[in-house]
Amino acid sequence: DSGVTQTPKHLITATGQRVTLRCSPRSGDLSVYWYQQSLDQGLQFLIQYYNGEERAKGNILERFSAQQFPDLHSELNLSSLELGDSALYFCASSLRGQETQYFGPGTRLLVL
Amino acid sequence: GNSVTQMEGPVTLSEEAFLTINCTYTATGYPSLFWYVQYPGEGLQLLLKATKADDKGSNKGFEATYRKETTSFHLEKGSVQVSDSAVYFCALSRQAGTALIFGKGTTLSVSS
Image: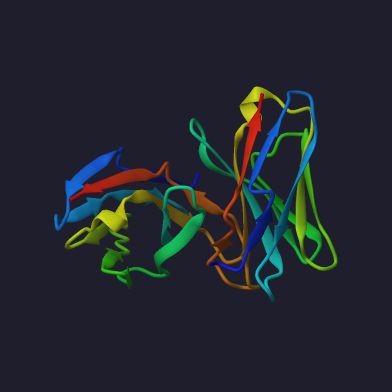
């Protein structure tokens, strides 16, 4: 158990819908990262937050957004969903100044 | 740009066989290198890491040595077990507090 929690574990929805994925980092970790794992693209970095502020963006679509709240949990919002958004979404967290990231169990999204 | 290349899988071995999974990287500066493992239906777990040239990371019988001259970080284990069946990801971090860059993953299947 990494100490990073993600909910829900599975999500099935339809094209055009909007969903919210939730992540709680390890106690004390200020950085939260979101990654997408798909069969064709592998593991891709989406976005990073540090202590409530957006720190870096990767291959994140404009239909996707995220935020980190004062209690440091983070939410990833995916809207206007397409079939190709079906993937495993991971959240990871790290301590300030540390390179090692600890991953949650992921949310498996299926868009039908 | 920065990238990680892993050998294509799947790798299929018999129990107690020797394992090597090749990983090479392209990066500016002095990245840290990681191996993560993903067991079926689970998230990514840190297996081992190395932060500078000639460092050897080790854990659970797995080893990898950071070779700057060949830009490699090959994963090895002397005697694999069925329980080692998983997907292995090589990754790099350019600096603390930045996203990980992953290889595409190598699936290992060990039979008894």
